[in-house]
Image (cartoon, rainbow, N blue to C red; front, top):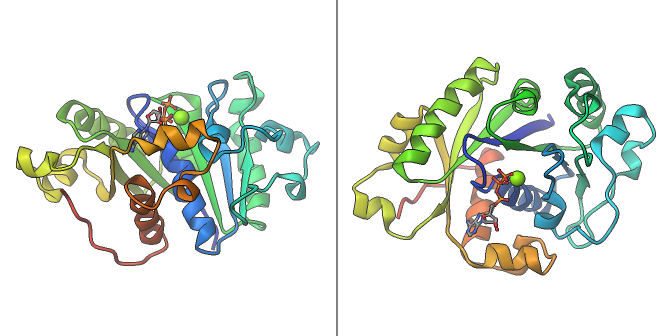
Length: 245
Ligand SMILES: Nc1ncnc2c1ncn2[C@@H]1O[C@H](COP(=O)(O)OP(=O)(O)OP(=O)(O)O)[C@@H](O)[C@H]1O
Ligand SMILES: [Mg+2]
């Protein structure tokens, strides 16, 4: 059954777009047919994180009006089975129309195995659209105490919006941080109130891959990319132990 997965955060710049691109690429590499939808209008940049900024990518509102069919959604040039719809250049009323998105997702579920929604930072109409329509939500946060407190607040908003299946991912984790701070996986989950799905390390190749217009998983074999592969496999139901460093 197709899973619609939304990526959200309390604070901005936590890595939603980076991880959306990387986890979706890994899902496609695992043999799934995957659609990514950039919902961050007008601050879209999922095309950059995927390495698809050169080719023209239509926006999801074009699919609402019927001017774009599912067969016309562009496929990634280097990752077979990975498709992208961009966000419109302006945050219009149409762009936040939950009913149109719901209708679109119902059709898209027939064509794709996984659909990833890259949300904007913070709360608001698109956050509500994402969390009310997704089957599961990934809350992306940094690992410091202030970020985790914000993540706890956002986790409560996710539950209020009606998404019952939500997970926490900690991004940009410095090697040895949790060990030195004496924090365990259980402490993290207790504080935020969500199951921890994965830890992604700070990795200087992340912005480099984007600058070279290359999907992260095609660019590196260490650091953030394999961490995202483990997250994709956990989302697919595989049991892979969490290692907190
Ligand atoms: N694991 C990582 N290691 C190093 N840099 C990272 C990592 N994850 C993300 N970044 C960098 O952090 C910045 C913000 O990432 P990204 O755009 O994915 O965040 P975002 O949550 O989507 O931001 P926004 O809230 O603006 O949508 C980017 O420059 C990205 O390259
Ligand atoms: Mg983003």
